[in-house]
Amino acid sequence: MNFLRQASVTMAVTMALSFVAAPQLALANNGLPAEANSVNLTELPVTVTEQSGNVLLSDSPEMVPADGITYQDTVSGDARLFFHHVNDAKEPKKIVALLTNEQDKAADVIVSRQGLGGPGFDYLAVGKAAQMNFFAKQDVGLLEVPAKGTVLLEPKLNEAVVEPGALVNGIYEIRTKDPVKVIVMMMPVDADPAEFVKKAPVLPADSHHLRGTFPGMDRLLVPTQVYNSPNDGVMAITLADHKIDTYVSGIDATDGSKTLNYGNYGVVYKLFLPTAFEQNYAVFLNPRGGEFAGGMKLKYRHQEEQMVGVPAEKLFFGSQTSKDAAHLGNFAGGQSLWLTFSPPGASNLPVKLVLAPVAKTK
Image 1 (cartoon, rainbow, N blue to C red):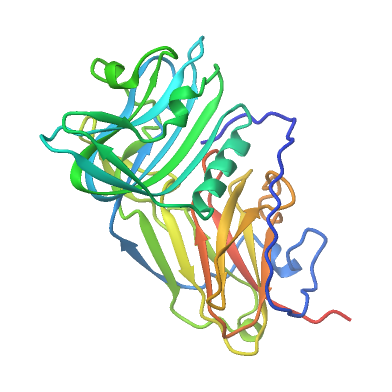
Image 2 (tube, rainbow, N blue to C red; image 1 turned 60 degrees about the vertical axis):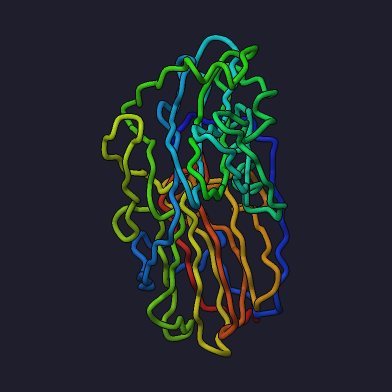
């Protein structure tokens, strides 16, 4: 998901996070403690548990050249759809997501979480908006898919005109007892999705083949040791690098081929961080792959989860991959802290969560 970025960035997401008072870090000019600027940081080892549910990823062809289906598969149980497409045709289009029911009885589909970004020409802004919306507090919805029928997963997309070169990024979490087919497609602006899907061809994947159905839509991460900031110093937890944290593998349901989710797009990471009592520490997110714009959820001391933009004070960062960092907060050791992260569309990976001791300033 690497793109040429437009230079004029006007959107900035500012989310304030409140947490208990703690001594401030002695920070270098770039925001990170000086010892954290190293390319190689000591890793805090974690155990990883993949949890049930499938990610349906539709990102190939990323630049959609013509009308047709970019991905489809039949699911039941828990699933998360992540689609990320640019209209690469010469005329305006619609990019829609549908649910179809091939059974003789209606199927109920719970939509537990959703996030939409775009259509837009600033791809980082679109990806960040989709993720911030997905992580924001929202109501659960219910869709009834009639027998032998079709419904729109996101009605707004049927009204949205996607100009040539514009991106649409959507993240939708669903649960269904009965099997339903999830379909993402690009189509003419004036066409009816329920009718067009009956004749729509499946488009071939591009060279990156970034689409498929991938088991393990959530990852639970728990360190194997308690982080003791004065003793352990600066440590990191690396996410989505395919070395320390491997990519999920799956099947492209349109042709049966094996595929790999480069970047783990659509996978949600839930990290619990055990820390030593009375030892304050700071947490940063450090992008190591390049430009990055997203969001995170933090739940501290069993209180309500709060959203933070990453970064909060501007749209994106990551041009200085070993130095740029978003300060997620200072925290008191021994208190419950959960971090929820997912790779945002249009951003580069991997990232590191950097843990550092908090030093009192003079």
